[in-house]
Length: 64
Image 1 (cartoon, rainbow, N blue to C red):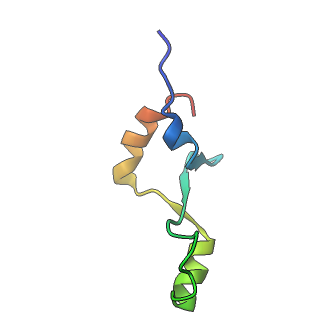
Image 2: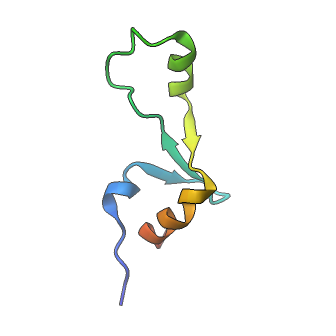
Image 3: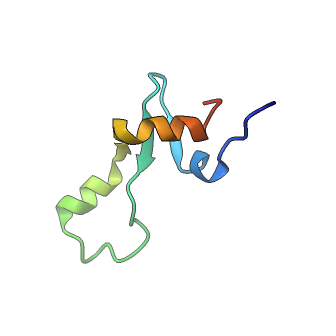
């Protein structure tokens, strides 16, 4: 029986060639004027999931 992909997570996550799991920073929509420049620059970059969460994510995305 085929496993189902957890679609909500697959839309928010990208897997690189070296099997790293990448996500976007949260809180980018609005209220960015009050954030410091350091925080704003950090939100532009993608973020890697920690190794603790990686096992759970790989179970939800079986074919990635």
